[in-house]
Amino acid sequence: MLTWLQRDNLSFPPLEKAMREPDGLLAAGGDLSPERLLAAYRHGCFPWYQDGQPLLWWSPDPRTVLYPEELHVARSLRKKLRQGTFSITFDQAFRDVIEGCAGPRNYTDGTWITMPMQDAYLELHQLGIAHSVEVWQDERLVGGLYGLAIGRLFFGESMFSRTTDASKAGFVALVERLRDWGFKLIDCQMHTQHLASFGARPVPRQTFANTLASYLDEPSTARWES
Image (cartoon, rainbow, N blue to C red; front, side, top):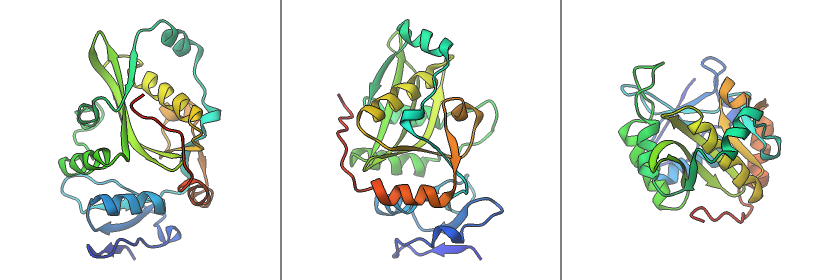
């Protein structure tokens, strides 16, 4: 039985209540307020839905994660990064990045980053919780990604690329920065070959939940605009 959330109650059902088919569907309804979004990530779930659907909350099992110390960068990509093809910034163009992530894709007609979702994460950015990575080439934004930093954990949301390897460059820069800041885990949510090529791997949902409990409230040395 799917749990429907009430607007006046920020609690979520236990993660083990998530459905097996579709994998990880935990709850529906509620809203995209900063308080609920923060409660969701701290609980181990995230919103994902299309226009015309109710607001849906997910906690897949297994969960795809990347441990920063396990980052793998292909030799060809490392060579390209050394050439200085791209320049990388952090938190300099959050709105442009989320709009880029919401843009058309050649493999789908729609986007789950609806205008309400964009507005919600922009508000989280203004609160210092959501952050962006920008990838520039010849002073033009050619790629980027965004997500949430809570404690010593980073919850990745989406990335985009307008030229070959742009999003890869941004992702590598982010992971290396998070590693230097002492972050313990990057939540990639669900498996893709793209993320697996960097070393992302599935872990049981309970392992993911245990990591949340250990590091959500741990301080980090992050300085996002440096």
